[in-house]
Image (cartoon, rainbow, N blue to C red; front, top):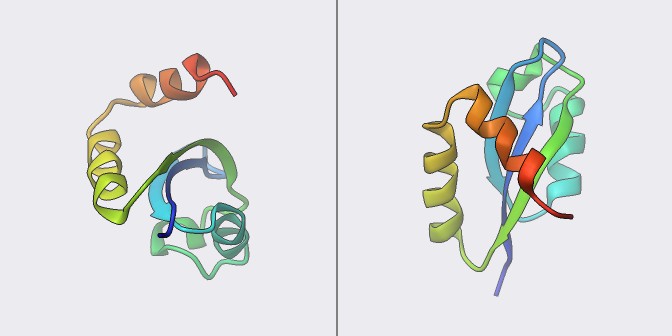
Length: 84
């Protein structure tokens, strides 16, 4: 069973991008090589700000959608409150 991650990266223009993946390290490398999402291609480098692990794609997709509805401040509170 694959683990899925929801993540938020901060782009070079200080905007945030939220996505899901099964390999967080490879995905960040892909974004930074300008082969990732269309949104991040012109906004590299990206920096990982937040990630959370889920047991399946469905749960991760639901959380990705929920996070995308949050304000910038609410997104920042995710990683400011999370204990690593």
